[in-house]
Length: 124
Image 1 (cartoon, rainbow, N blue to C red):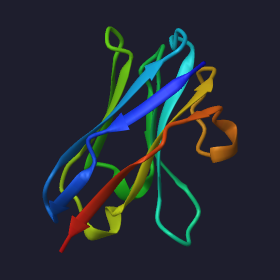
Image 2 (image 1 turned 45 degrees about the vertical axis):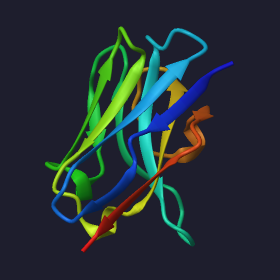
Image 3 (image 1 turned 180 degrees about the horizontal axis):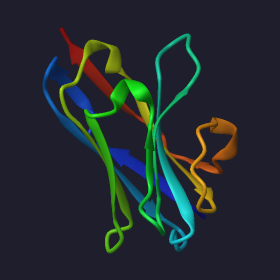
């Protein structure tokens, strides 16, 4: 069974940095897309960033471009989200997700597996 376990969330001041990790297990992820999404209470879960495990191609939502970087470590089966220059509006629960294939998509319905989420809180 596929398992995704996020870590690295926490409380940080505006302008600070955090690095989220998503440890993946249960199968070989060489033909998967790994994504990060976030959700605040009362709002839909939104796409943040994704990476194709095979090709390393990436995609970001406009609001995080230039501040967030998604990367992967093949040896550790882990995906990272480096978040710099954090803003209060980045406050959310961040979820790791995985989908079979090499095409990056932004819709939550296209992802097959989800982690439990990790809270990120940015104070002003």
